[in-house]
Structure formats: C-alpha cells, structure tokens
Amino acid sequence: MKKILFSFIAFLGVFVCTYAQVEVRYGIRGGMNLSSWQGETMQSISDLLGATDGAVTTQSRVGFHAGGYAAIKLSDYFTLEPGLQYSLKGTELTGRLNGNSQVIDFLNVNTTFRVQSHYIEMPILAKVYLAEGFHLFAGPQVSYLVDNKVHVRASVLGISAFNRTLDINNGFQKWDFSGVAGIGYRFVNGVNIMAAYDYGFQRLDENKRFNTYNRTIKFSVGYEF
Image 1: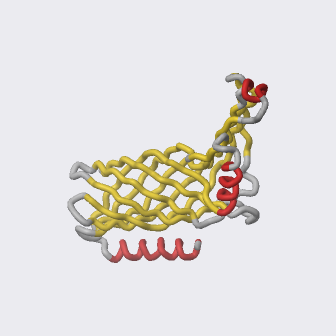
Image 2 (image 1 turned 120 degrees about the vertical axis):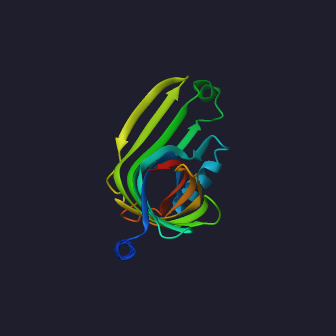
Image 3 (image 1 turned 45 degrees about the vertical axis):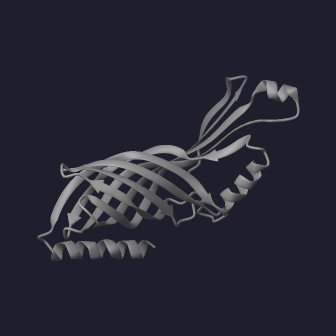
C-alpha cells in the first residue's frame, strides 16, 4: 500500500510539472469528525452489549479536523487536491450497570470508555465537477498516529468515582491507509463545503490480534485564497 501511494505522489508531481500552466490555489479547511471502530471484533462486542438490553452502547466519537490543501485545477471539470491535516478520531462506549438488585439500581453506576486517536493525515483527492460548484471526489489517504489515549470514567450516585486517562500507543499501528469519498460544493468566492467518508483498510492492532478498522464521517468548511 505504501509503494502504491508513493508511486501515485511521484506521478502527481510529474503530471503537474508537465502541465505547468495549470491553475493552483491554496486553502484551509476544518470541521467535525464522527468516528468509530468497525470490524469483526467490534461486531462481537456489539453482540455482547446487546445482551445487556441497551444498558451499554457503542457510539461515534465526536472529534474534529483542520489543515490546509492545494487545489490543482487541470480543467473546468477536474481538480486534484493534495492536503495535510490534523484529525481526532477514536470510538466510545457508554453505559449504566443494571441488575436485579435494588441496591445496584439505587447506586446508579455509569461508565464511559472513550478512545482519543490523534492523526496527521495526507489525503489526495480527485474532484469531478458535475455542475457549477457541485462536485464528487475520491482518493487515497495516508495517516500517521501521533498519540493514542483512552479516557475511562465511572460515577456512582452521580458523583465521579474514577476518572483517568491512559496511554495506549503500544500495540497500535502507526500508519493507517484509507479510501476517501464524498460530495462538495464550491462557491465563487472560494468558500467550500464537503461531506466525506473515510474507510480505513489497515488493521489498528499491529499484532493483528483483533480485526478492527477506523471509519469516519467528516463535515468540512474551507476557503481557497
């Protein structure tokens, strides 16, 4: 996968140099991430959580992304867009301890398990304009894991009983490779909006003990200079 990506970047450089008259604009972009882990392992966890009658659930981790990009206009209908951005991903489990005991119900024990994965991402998007401003896009993305933490919190009777952040960098893949696709609209003043889906192909566990991958929905607002 790395060789394919680097070959694509080299081809992009040669292509741009060959067609030196192309229009290049630069921009900044930021927005919201809705991230989760998906795969066989997470499905097993979901099946297990189903036995709790909804007491414990999985949900998307709300994060954000921000960075810059270059819009290389090759024609009125086609643009290449390499970029570099910071992105916060992860997943989240939340729940309440249930039981047949009135004491357990009275204690109202709630827990939260939140993974915070910090990535530097480099997407290379190919945009096809179907109408004035409206476009579809797709392309590869390589990401590097800068930091990975899990925040565990538990409360009893509404009072915090455990609140700790743990480092979980060891055992996780440093590199992630994804496919990105989505839709967007660019206004004539340079403002643009996008909705994208990142589909991770690289297992998160470097030892391949669990089969789980990153999945992220992104909503972005950007501006080209």
